[in-house]
Length: 239
Image (cartoon, rainbow, N blue to C red):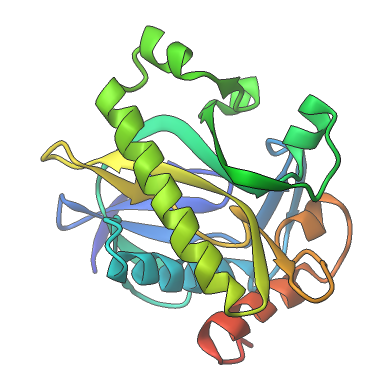
């Protein structure tokens, strides 16, 4: 796939315009960031792992009826995706309390929620991606009522599919962050990525994190944990 210009560079990925105006090439970087990029590092091979894990998971949820922007894996660090207009919101679906919700509400970590909890965050690094309500979203016209409905429905569907999928791999899906985009036809589809960068994943036997919390909390062995997620998903080792 021939690329022309770089469209955007984020904390973890670069997006390139391709010869096909309806497609973008996504290159996953080796960078690691946390706390809205206040903590930064880089690990050789991390981009390859997140690229391949995300490709596997996006392809899997696609087979389960979730419309996504993923088209195909191109190489070790790149994949081809449909070009969509990203809605400026992140949806976090929580099954178990961890991370910011514990600090914000003063609740203990590890509480299993009766039903999945969906939260909206405004995509704005300068503001620290603040939590927003549906009324905020409607008042500032970041999305329409039908957009909100579609995103929540898809987010809960992805959560249900992956919670069951990971349970079969002896992994607990604690929470996940999802982003959505609008196609030229006006449809809302899943975009961005699904990886240990965007999900909290705990080993079902030990409770040990197998995700970016290992970097956030200085637990070490970040790449080893990502490789373990890859191994369980595919049954293959990743060098």
